[in-house]
Image (cartoon, rainbow, N blue to C red; front, side, top):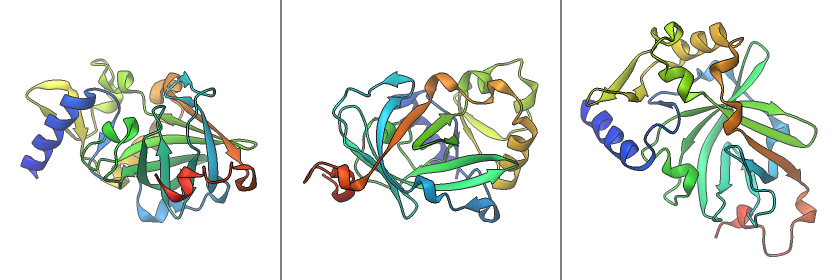
Length: 209
């Protein structure tokens, strides 16, 4: 396990040091997993990590059978396992790479690591908001001291968390009212696409490249 963590940290630091919060374990227990039927289908990516990409020619994303198929702004594909869960009244998504293909989103995970997203379903829209790395890395933040993690070569900002799913659930429930917990500036906004309106032979998220 120690060697796995060190390898993971080396790769993460080399490609995406300090991009998001990584966990070796899922952010939820199986008992908390829910179905989110409204998330199934095709989605147009309008905002990617806070950047307006609505005018870019990006293939539609797709969510089906616990798989999230993504395309980045360079139209490269990656697949992720995605499960939705609910704590109190808030919906979350636990995402982990499952694809040998890689795009910008897959590159920030490198080895399979769990990433948490707050989910905000809307009227034909879906918003994903990641955890706030700056808040987690704030040395004066007492709330994160209870979390278990490992660091690479003493770099306290290069960190992988090792909490159990139940420990993550407890932490999230205790901090849901903390505005800084999630980073709204890095959100992803998608709009629903009716499958019938997809251009013929261009549904790349349905068939892959």
